[in-house]
Amino acid sequence: MSPRSVFYLCLASPLALTSCATSPYAPEPGPRVQPDDKEWRRKSLPLPPIYWRFTTGENNQWTMATPLYWQVRGADSIHRHLIPFASYSADLAVDGSPGESEGHVLNWFWKDEPSRSYRVAFPVYWRFEKPGVETSVYGPLYTRHEAGAAWRDRTILMPWLYSREKDSTGYDYWAVLFRLVGYEKQRFNGERKERLWLFFVFPIPVV
Image (cartoon, rainbow, N blue to C red):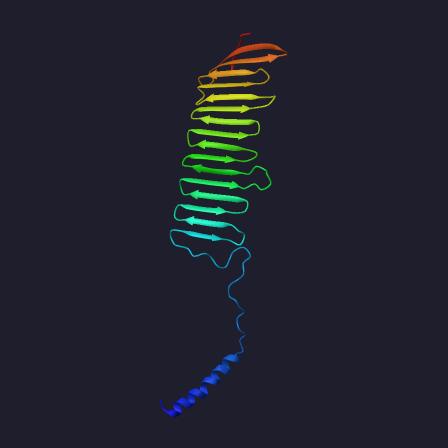
């Protein structure tokens, strides 16, 4: 490179720097990372696709062992899933009150709440409970029990091969063969009365 070329290069460099410094465009505000009050900006190092674990700004801890297992644990709840074989979720009660929980293992499902609960072994067993009432299904057998002073029971063997209803008043009715034949008992003013039912519509007094 000739001495004249070196001279012109040295002269041009300060002019270029001066031009950049006096640019009419305002510099971009920084930093470019947008703040988030719910998520940490820096995450723990994952090991894809096997293991991943991080904690959010709300202190929820996520753990994933892909592709089957993942867990989320917070201050008041926890969730665990082994896809598609099992799952479990629960509220962590901090004030002594009962929390809620639910989950499944294969075809067994359950849920517990203060106001209701259920147990299901799909598709052969179902059981539902709420204060004072229990309902169950065992294959073709259906039962329902309402507790208390005015209790009531009902049983049905599907498809209506046998059914029975009774309650605290002394009422008792059973039927067979799609209710083509039934027998009813009741009390009227302390007196017990009974009658036979044929084809739904023909009552025959017995007592």
